[in-house]
Length: 164
Image 1 (cartoon, rainbow, N blue to C red):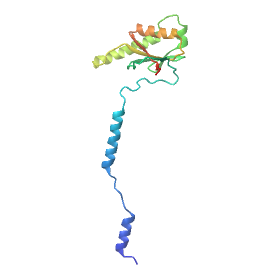
Image 2 (cartoon, helix red, strand yellow):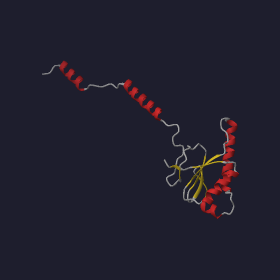
Image 3 (cartoon, rainbow, N blue to C red):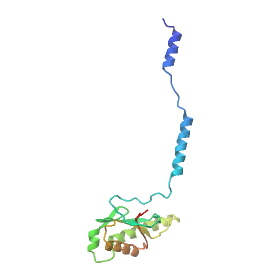
């Protein structure tokens, strides 16, 4: 027959409980955090390109700067992701200016001016980035650029894929 002392010893050996070592765990998390901070690219991709766009290819090497984004697909004209007008409507119009785009650009200028009153580091730059599908007619692109210029957005850039 087993003694009480032997039974207690056997129970203790079966129910060994481990303790979590927090110091090595904190070291590992710190190393991962430092690795991610060092490898984070500040100049990363600031332009999200919708898969339905087929941008033209260029040899340009200048990286795009943050600005207002005007997108043109083969069907729609959008500003900051919101539909402004249809490409078919723009093509049918004989006027060089696109009134809905001009109106939205003016609204954006008012927003930037309001923010600039409260934050002196924000200034209206008149920069616009046109992200256009390579299949759109040049006449549409020309009307968009004209409208942007008329609304005070004379710093116009075109989004392209680099050939490198």
